[in-house]
Length: 309
Image (tube, rainbow, N blue to C red; front, side, top):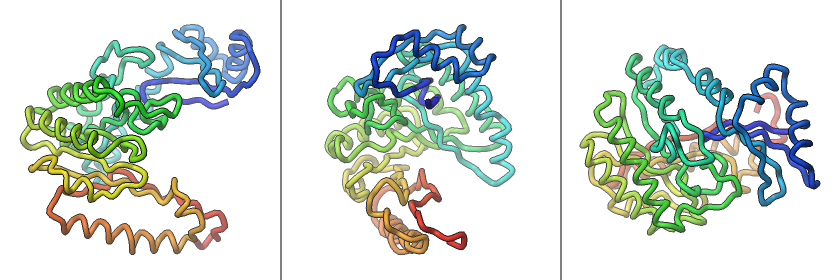
């Protein structure tokens, strides 16, 4: 059994391939919870559904769980910690439904806008800047769970309505925070998939998003994310998306690709020095956007590494 609480959704998920009844699921779920959690469960608004992979989801649609998570997962103490350790910027992921808070469309749960307001307030107190990152677009821009996809489907590029809703979210966010001294920039979309989002659709969206940001702010950085998968970041350098304070966001993971599967620890280190550094230098030497490495991780798929490695 796995528990998820992200992107404004909260799930308790168990994989069941039998025709189990709803009552059986409740018994299985409650057996895994503490007495206090079981008491809370009865005060939630929840429902049960089965997805296309024949998995059953108990969906928490409202109540105390997610609010307790938001109130405790990130607090002002975290911003104090960042300030004390010299961190001057945070990148905050949001879903498109934040623009409809406090009553977003089902199945999303209200409260994310209050959490974002809190983050800006805490950031101001500790002189930290904020990047707002549209991490989840309507119908998902990459089919992954962190973009609020429940079935792996990427629907965002298939409908003008989805793109319009994304632009509406950008408009909402910039109009709300443009005058806030903590705002550093707006990331128009996180990790669109190269396999499913065409370059033409993405560039058109980025150009419209850039103009929306500039409608409210002449100084906020407009951040565009490279497509994930087989795509060259240089493709966005040649797109003429905007002329002022435009930033290209690169995500560096030595993961998620069979290319890294047989690398040793030293191979991974040399790849960073020989490939990543070279790529950054080439981009910086080009006449184009600034460069941001917005995501990275020190995790490798080194299965036979020694303690020294």
